[in-house]
Figure 1 (tube, helix red, strand yellow):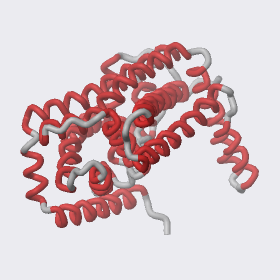
Figure 2 (cartoon, helix red, strand yellow):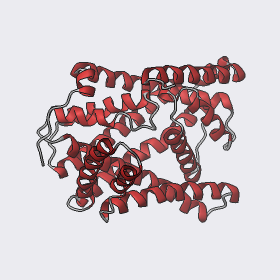
Figure 3 (cartoon, helix red, strand yellow):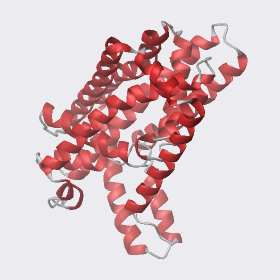
Figure 4 (cartoon, helix red, strand yellow):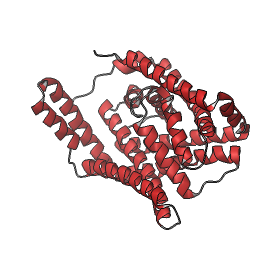
Length: 341
């Protein structure tokens, strides 16, 4: 039986709320509430600033890449589009990539550039963002090699680093060396499956997109590198988020290695296990396990998750307001015709 997208989303919300309810019942909601109150308005304000800084530098990095591609978009519109795509990705169980087409459509609607070129800038920016993430993890791994870190902990950090580095190298080599691995994969599927017309159209689209993305690592390498530097600053804001929370609630200061490990593990949780809208239930359960490695109990981990979610929900609301302003159905289902290349 095939379940529709709305049915799947509703079921995932129910499952997520069920998991969250079970966690709160086991831990005790009063303990979580008490932990939240210790954060204070000053700590909550710093968390807001860290998330705003992350969005700001993500957007600047994307604008730099768009300028390299010749895509002209106002800074304010680019920021709104970034937040709008975040809202869709946040509410869609899609490993944080579901809102990227919406981001491209917002810019396409207000510029003379083609959808494929705008989407290529988004993919290039995501690769740049992932490169910054890997750089932060590798720095922590290098510190771990030259410090008295437990061997089992160091092994986990190295394995996580290799996982991200391997994927990143594959993506960069694909576009830099013009391997067109995704196009070749779809061509292989076309020979294997009976839907040749449909898969043939997908192959043409992916081939065009891969050629566009190749420009980021060929003709626009300078813009891509500058974008990476801005993404690195955004990554620092992400990395410091647990430090801000636990400094104001416990007065605790993590080492660079601890922060890097937290960042790596939370990144994996967020990227691979985003199977409910907003990560409801799944993120709280995962964070309990992650923070337990650092001697932090379950109520504190859930309270941290809630403090971040409150701010994220605000940005989700802003993003949905953007989509309502532009007409979400039009953005999702109507596109202006793309000029033939």
